[in-house]
Amino acid sequence: MGANGDFGANASMLSHHVTGTAGSDPSSSQCLVCHDLSAHMRGTVLLRSADTGSVITYDPARPSTLEPFCLSCHDSDGALVTSTSGTSFNPFNDNRFLGVIPNVAGTQIKSYWTGSVNRHKSIGSLTCAGSGQPGTGCHGNNGKINMHGSSMNGLLANSMNFQIPLTSGGTNTFVYDNYKLCFDCHDNYSSVTKEVVLGYKQGGKYDVPWAPTPYYTSAIQTLFRDRFIGNPANYPAYWSGVNQPYNDSPLLGAYAPLHNFHLLGDTSSLGIGSIPLSWKYRGSALLIGRITCTTCHNVHGTNGTVRSTYQELGIVANIPYTPLPPDEYKTFDPVSNFDDAVMKSYPINCNSSCHQTMGPTSYWFSPADE
Image 1 (cartoon, one colour):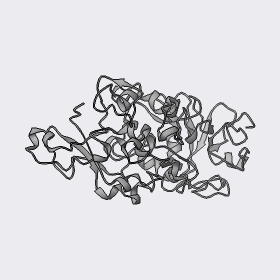
Image 2 (image 1 turned 45 degrees about the vertical axis):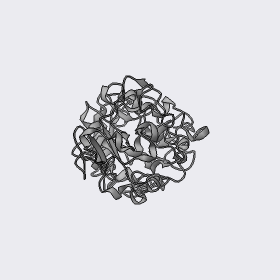
Image 3 (image 1 turned 90 degrees about the horizontal axis):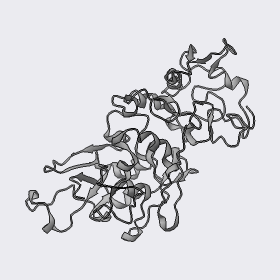
Image 4 (image 1 turned 30 degrees about the vertical axis):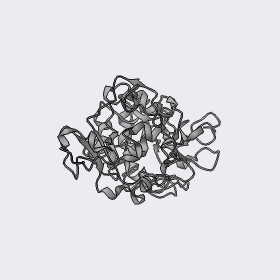
């Protein structure tokens, strides 16, 4: 508690479970929403299941023991059992409601985490709480488990910036700390390192000034990339002179590294303007910045979508057209998912009509032809 504590009285805490009034700590009754005090001060932390009120014992040596407690509240019925005058969707009675902006995901997380295919959940012992490193979880404070509060947004254990500003010329200067939580952990998995996500060959065909990279590598590896062949004379021989429907991105030129474009790019040199402040963190009109990792990727899990992208985007491989080998592409399914009805709604929460303006696109990612 207090000015150096975990809650609102500590101005450095950007996020915390209980808000109370501005600058204040929670009341005793708010603490009892989560905590069972039957063994208080005996060295064991006992928590209350938000569904049944039954006791859940937290073992600091095993962060996963917090997971049933977390998911009991972050499910479709919220906190059915509370010990304040709050409700299931406002358990702390602090005017913050699960299931509505900016906490829409608060009632969805259990269904995401227990989805049929969950890359984060399937790797090691990743769980809710941890240091942000492999084998623990993403929520805490400065590398330590702390479900009370964090100096990072989203109760995160490491830095992630969800309101990345534009800099001069409409570009985004790459700052590693803006993505530190994701990239620090991903460095332990060779297929998803920062170099895989953002790297390409210096002087290669994807080395374009409007989509810069902080990491030159021997070759582009990310599959979020696109090609466009405008001149029929340059069509691959196996196309037999017929254009293919996935060859459809003339606005971005012949070669497009799409992670770099969305995160760092400035397309004003192409005559189509720069990417504006284009994303609303948690859907809030007060929290606007550049696109970042969680704009497209559901880190809590999905039911088998491409690269853990949101199911609402509907990104699929090689549908509805059958590509000619060795070609492969991905697109929206249905194609209408590019419009504002999807892109500007939860969970994508775009702030600008980028795809509505530029039209639907497939990204033809293989072969890279770098």
